[in-house]
Image (cartoon, rainbow, N blue to C red):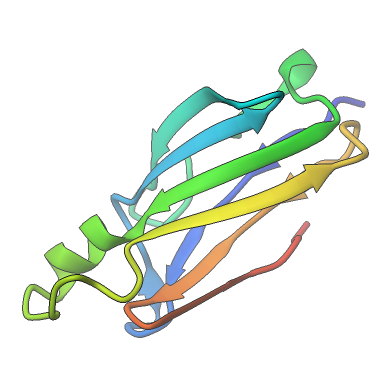
Length: 117
């Protein structure tokens, strides 16, 4: 069984999926290497795994969520600079044969994540 990496973004201030958030995936191997870019759909999810198959290997990864661009569209009156702008999540993959789901729950003033299923 081959593993995969998926994600989604929820706007916890509005209680809705965060549509249109750009996400950039990097692998850290003696420096960051960009692997993929995607944008969330109307459900706050990506249409496909951001990484899967033979490309999904053990190691350290980084997801960059451009949440600030989303908040600027949703709430144009927010003071600049935004408190939460780009969210960087670094995480390790030790079992690349498994499904790693790394969601982002975000508001203009806080965020959290977890390893989902």
